[in-house]
Image (cartoon, rainbow, N blue to C red; front, side, top):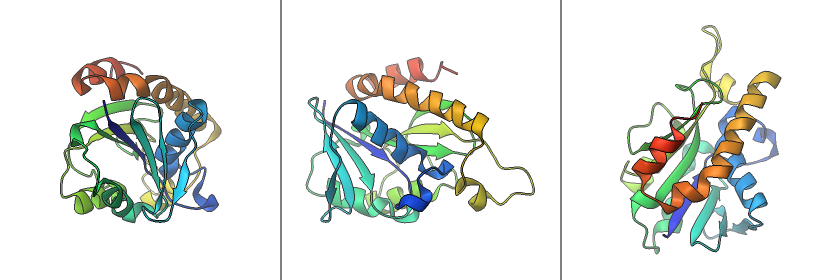
Length: 187
């Protein structure tokens, strides 16, 4: 089944280990394990790879708030059903280390999702939400997502990354509802 997996994050090495980059980190890890080369594409403003099951992997080479532009450019001449598009992103509303698969929905205040919805003119794509928790009451949300997690949080996030890496073939090859039932039960 032809699918697209998008990993959201900010471009550049200064953002590499930040909470906000967990989506791009996961896609990079999947591609590393599957021995897929993510190739720079100036045309699409993204790094793109393809596996033997017709699953495309895409990491935008933009800042988070412009993530929708490269995805829209890529999808412009491709025939994808949005039911087979999966966006991996950080989520403040989930506890650190939790993962949830969700069909469609709003932005939850996430600028990357906001950009995707704007450029794609739809919110029907699937989301693989990676919990990063909320900042302390006195801490600014922007500073929180643009900082590295603590050592204990990183261990929980790394377990979540492993779960998604191990589950990505299942997620992209079967009914989303079935994948939701299996993935969302995990802690």
